[in-house]
Length: 364
Image (cartoon, rainbow, N blue to C red):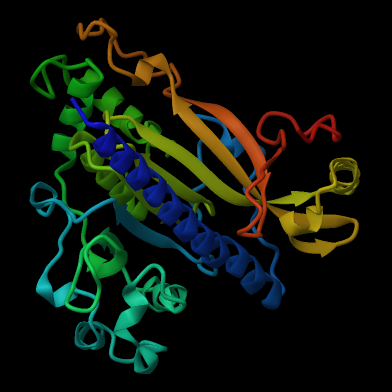
């Protein structure tokens, strides 16, 4: 049984982790969404806004890639990456975040001459600059609580770059099938057709379409293995196809994964007027929620949160489920909101967008 001090320490660690996740998410909203939007504007190209229908669970996402859109893959681990997970996250001495390692991989990387080791600390003012320098490189970045001779243990820091996420997909499928009580032991114990249906649903579990590949596939595998090992952490992923920032979070308690996504939305004239009226009535400065304003329209950051349906949860009694219905949704939408760009303003404004944008005065 945990003592009161142990419980308080654990609760403090959770708050600390959530604060770190929030700080990184804000940096990535700026880099992957807002900066991408301004890149399109500078090039006099229309920004490819995500359609509301694409946010509905099980929706198909177009396969086109928008190469001007910034993408990212980052794994945040609450603690030092456990030894049991190191076989899935390729962390070597050669890809530690050190100037000589970065120069060996990308000698002409912009900003490398100004690199300062202190920037690895999440609390350092230059942390965001270091992220921006390394995010264009391939594979994943790893942030964890790992001390060095200059950084005390317990502080979050960017420790590795060019991290490959390695896991056999058959092993991931089998683990998910057993966790959700669709399988007892073997991946093929219920036939090849059953296995193919499970493969399609695997990506839906993370709110990706079943043809997810590249960074999205790696993100799903990373989030799953952390959840299976009860390791608290978050995977941040943006691809040039879906143009949204997805956060997959393992709570470290059970094997579930929390899902939230951020994207840019364009508010039409009626919606902007309704938002302004709501802000006046609630004494809220709605300009803090706008990325760009070009009357009569405006651009804002939208957040969608999802949870898993019963089909994507273990049986209550641990018994084997009789069947897998491929048409049954595995995730449901549970929250929609506009989020503030001001780090000191955490209030979100409820905004129906995915299924219906009417009535226009439906801000909450």
